[in-house]
Figure (tube, rainbow, N blue to C red):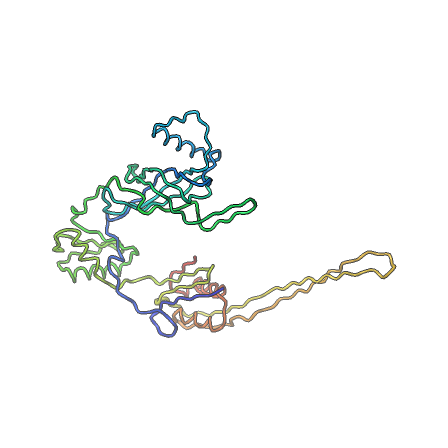
Length: 367
């Protein structure tokens, strides 16, 4: 297993990526009210090459197909049809903020029956509803599936996910979200990662660059801006003046560990208090070597298998009792563990134990 350690540190003792940078406010906050909306619809994909739903196992596919044909003036009441070139799907998409009637958005199409592939299929006109039950867009078009499937008499192969795909610009906006941005008197900036220091710095830089004490920090996650004090002639102009201002954001000390890949990511502000560490491994080995004993020539008897077992316990070299002085950065501890040849899994266990002992002063996230 390859072991990657990404140490984002301010010290220069290791090969690290350091140097804190200023970040634009637009990359740290969301403007209250400026958001996308989720859309979902239930539709039918046709034109499949025998890879659609088995209608005996997916009766809802037959129902929607009958409804579509009846709307088109085709009477199928009482008819028995079992085509394999159609599939029932769920269609999802995001209605972006300020989307206008006639605009186009991307949609994702996913099979919900036992269809094997949506390759080459065409989505029939499907209304897309929002959480309020209203239709905001209508989707239709050729599905671009994200995989491939092939099947023979005795074997089959599937690469990717052929039962899901996308339709770029496949939905047209039919209704706008009722939100008049121009009537706002205050802007609420919601921090993506709430932090009091970061919010205070956003307030300070807005008041310093725009003046008139326009910004006020309400809490760790919200900064409000009085548009009347910004001097802008519209809320949109005020956002333009604010979102490109840059600050240095604060972040919590955090260590992220991925046990599957052995990846450890940490920040420069992670510190360890004085702690002693001792680690070692015990390996139990059991080897079976049964011996077959044959009877003497021309003697009456049977072959007997005599069990032979060799068992032992091997203690692999580990870390003796080592003391870590207080104030040591985690990068220095990782560097020392690497120098001792500690395996990735053992290193993660050591970090867990240091955290459990209360000596690792950071949020510990295990993925």
